[in-house]
Amino acid sequence: MIDLVLRGDSVVTPQGVGAYDLGIADGRIVAVAAAGRLPVGEGTRLIDATGKIVMPGGIDPHVHCKWFLPNPDGSAGLTDPPDVVSRAAVHGGTTTIIDFTRAQHGATVRDAIEAREQDWHGHSACDYAQHLMVEGALQPALFPQLAEAIAAGFPTVKIFTTDITPSRKGRMVDFGDIWEVFQVLAKHGGLGVIHSEDNDIVMHMYARLIREERTAFANMAEVHNTLSEDISFRRVIRLAEKVAGTALYMMHTSAASGVSAIREARARGVPIYGESLHQYMLYTSADYQRPNGQIYHTYPSLKSAEDQAALWEGARDGSINCVATDEICCTLKQKIQGVRIDDTTGGNAGVEPRVALMYTEMVGNRGYSLGRFVDLVSSNAARIMGLYPRKGALAAGSDADICVLDPADQRVIRAADLHEADYTPWEGRKMAAWPCLTLLRGKVVVQNGRFLGSLDDGKFQPRKIAPEIIAGPML
Image 1: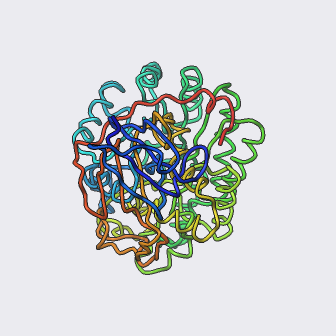
Image 2: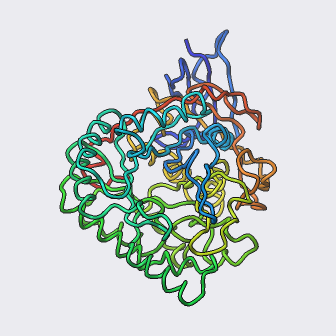
């Protein structure tokens, strides 16, 4: 028996946007029919979303919860845990987030996975998955463990090509070890998710600006610059091309040079996908000059208006496939504690407003179709990361993860109204819509701003990358 019928006149399905009834039972969508066609019998709840936008729940493929947070004095703490971030996510219409397990934080990769699950199980209001992260010098014993993890539902492996800052030695993986990881990914159906910057250029620029006594964080774009992105993207892509079957997901693409490298590789048939962040799409390096300009920063740096325009062009032509957050949830005090190019806190508290922000900018201001908007904030992440069609689709058989946006709710974003940090880089922005209803596997977890879910609702989501994603550039 159908438990719930969700009826709308602007429902975004894989077949297009239209007036549909969604029939939901046992946490899944069991029927999609023309609006008014599904019977609503005794014991079946009807939710009428006429006049609103019904879409798959948002998927953020790049968040960091309970994560290492370095302080300028050399000490370190942790960012906010899933308890906080996941609750903010469902308030904002996001129903699945993908975090990271540091593969070497345990005697084996399996140990690291099990330890990380303790941070999440019973602590998440939304569903979740984990990328594996490898760092530094990789031991030979790691590679067969990665293969086992891919088979166990952890098919994405994050790799750094830079230490990011001089104080974070040990993040970068050298190209010989990256080559070895790519061979594992290609053989076992994995996907490389890459933080790609040229370490030589980045560290040279740190040394140069420190020598020139230009250490203020507002100079960050000179350090994490477009040349670094250009060289590193192309080097990683070239290496992947030499290992048949290697597929790439380029995280937080920030520059025109990165977009061009992805576009050109896709034209050659390389299975490569681009991610950008809402910070890069809506702010530039000029915003570092604003009061508390650190709140706009993540690594790599914000870039120029020309680079930003290239990101939007990439989002239209398929070079940029996903808009994520690189979520780091911390206090304003922690976010602005660093004032130098080498100690500024990265990441942003943005998982809650992401869907509304992107709807406002894409559909409201730039004329994107609803389908393209949904692809960029939900469906493409599901397809690339091995969750589709269980997630990211309003279709029979899919999980009933649903966000309903209300165009009548054109609120102005205020940190005091959000549910994560005590600041927001989006303060004062007027939205063209805001989520009024979020369902997770058929359960209403947020309705009209009221949290009705629990931290036991979120479930780990094992993943397997679809062969067609690895075979060539889709989407």
